[in-house]
Length: 188
Image (cartoon, rainbow, N blue to C red; front, side):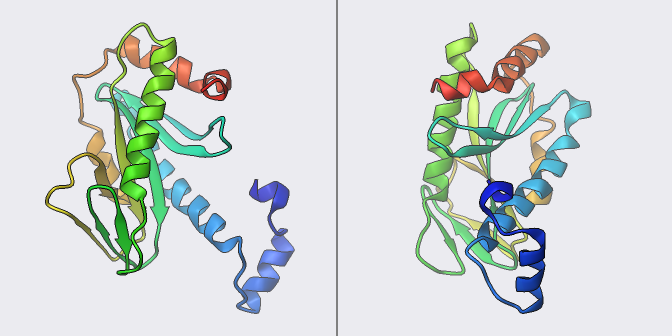
């Protein structure tokens, strides 16, 4: 979408040199955050994990990352907030004390969506957990009651690597094969 509708490289360079902000800045920041988290996730491949990035949903949105492996499936939602102080509660998050954002609730809903799509095509239950990864934050705090969404900073997402006991190697490949097909996501 950025390539189709966003400013050209020359326009972005000019705006940067003139220190002008643009409506597209948050899109580019989000993309950079997703790329950084994607690099961290790719490091888990030797442990039997498969990763997919930028899965297009039927409603026009996307799933930032899916991590599929011995520990199940993790639906990963990435948020890039450079230098911010973030607090995450049961359903909301506050960035620098501003208005609450429904990041945790959205991550839970996305994991439910992923589970429904994958189980439609797999002959077994597919365990899907929501993960919220913050990129570039100065501090990250979780509410004591926040256990429904895994919350990490970008470098800590590797903690998912040793997770096991949910899917066999054959099931991992089956889920990965289903998740790679755009048709599965378009029918949802």
